[in-house]
Amino acid sequence: MKVSYYPGCTLKTKAKELDKYGRRAAEALGITLEEIENWQCCGGAFTSASDEIATKLSSVRALAEARDKGQDLITLCSACHNVIKRTNDAMANNADFSMKANNYMKLDTPYTGETKVIHYLEMLRDTVGFDELAKKVVNPLKGKKIAAYYGCLLLRPGKVMAMDNPENPRIIEDFIKAIGAEPVIYPYRNECCGGYITLEDKTIAAKKSNKVLHSAAVAGAEMVITACPLCLYNLQKNGTEDLPVVYFTELLAEALGVKED
Amino acid sequence: MTELQMKEQVLRMSGVDPLKCMRCGKCSGTCPSYDEMEYHPHEFVYMVEKGQISKLMASDSIYKCLSCMACVERCPRGVEPGKLVEAIRLLAVRRQGANHLKPDDIPALLDEDLPQQAIVTAFRKYTK
Ligand code: SF4
Ligand code: SF4
Ligand code: SF4
Ligand code: SF4
Image (cartoon, rainbow over all chains, first blue to last red):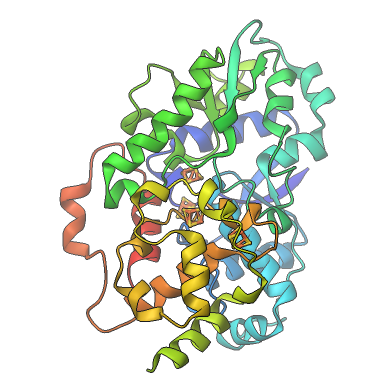
């Protein structure tokens, strides 16, 4: 099965492992991630103001390309997913924005939100199925206590992202179970790590990140997993708690036995 | 622009109706940047209602919001205060020469692990 794939700028640079293990694991599960051509950086943040048009066009371009190929659009970075999914929602539901964006783009066929934007985790849950995934695991991560870190971008705003219950999610915990490990539930799993504030004021990012890490450590976690390169950076670089933070795709590839070259 | 015009602009950009607010303070209670802000999310709602936009534009609080959308998700009345913060920050940085982050600032902020995502997002949030 082939799907369109939007890697995003960070997965080509500082977060190469998130991408590499994601592709390998997908292949092992019978899914080929076809990188869309000429994608451009989504900008990392969706601007909720409805009079912002130009900053959303790179996402519209990616969405229209997947539509033209008749494929779903798979994302992996939490930020890309948030930006592209919210842009898609605006294209489908905000007629004024959609008209202005289409006027700029002059596509052969106007785009009105037809593409389904699916995060890699949703693909595992809904296309592969966690039960099927569990059957394909060759190296179960037995006994490992893992804390899922959702952060803010995967889940909110819940009405648009619609990935899971934004206040009590389970998709990453179900993933952790599927690869044979033990999920650790902790209060700060869906609170923000500080995000881009690290460029404005590192002490704020450190405070926020340590709250998350401390919360996970107290609950007994040995490791934290994330889908977001900026979460990983903040928790590792700005946090001081001694808890490894890794991309979920790395554990997936390990469990499927495709991590090593 | 007059305060009234700015208020109308902010309401239009954000789609927020401050009159729906019942002043429960839940948005501020859940805001991860509460300690860093001079004006807190519920005050943004109140001050926009009162048309005090330039005061908010001049406050550092607009650069302390993390856009985490916790206040948007958890407001029992669906007011979405975070969208007001975003609209007011945009009004501020759209002014000539008012960018909060300048390309020349970036080299000093880099380290070898900083993801590109952090830089592009900060530019989206702090500049025009
Ligand atoms: S979210 Fe990030 S990593 Fe993803 S493309 Fe956009 S800016 Fe780049
Ligand atoms: S980087 Fe922090 S701010 Fe961003 S999603 Fe991750 S939690 Fe939220
Ligand atoms: S949570 Fe909503 S209703 Fe309560 S103070 Fe904030 S904006 Fe007003
Ligand atoms: S979006 Fe901004 S104001 Fe709202 S809770 Fe997050 S940091 Fe606070």
